[in-house]
Image (tube, rainbow, N blue to C red; front, side, top):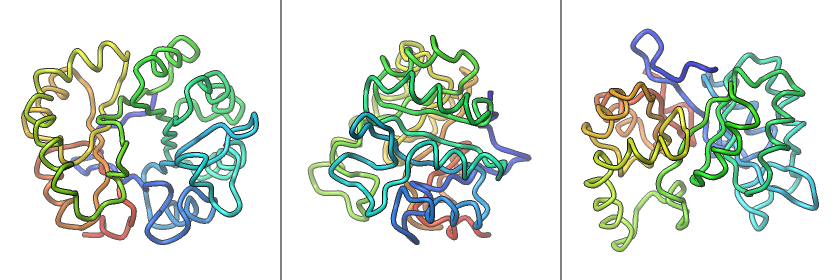
Length: 233
């Protein structure tokens, strides 16, 4: 199972949807840029479309030339980078586990979802796969917003306050081995609780170098960013 803890004190650099700020997200070009810019893991979304699995945040957000999951894994397998698959369509767990096995990357991969049932299904299918519980569900496109609305930010603040007391039960219920958390619900107490449970914390989505530095000070294990250049320095 992939080690998602800090490496020699350095947080893990994860490219969001490849390098979404620099190329069309969830495309082979975006994945290639994330690799080129030194990301430790490359994250991308997977949805079901016409019976197949393609890279996209949703069926309504398809790239102009959607890459299949097999094409993405075939590209990433020789790079040696970690692979972070964000599962968007329930029921695709067997196909995703099968694709990771086919390309020989199970032990280098993390699959995340906000659905505990999907993670439990994957645990039964592939016990050696790292599983990340995403919180909260990205209903409002939080990962793409530079300025959160007046309604969304207070809701995240409430979630943040309660999360330290809830996170242990949430992770256990999902059989998750990692916490994949929005940056506005992360707190020192949440990080301490996860680490006490032996669970690494990955945070989405940092947009600035200042946000990366702040998360680094909190002791999170990895940061997911649209523009991997913000990790420099």
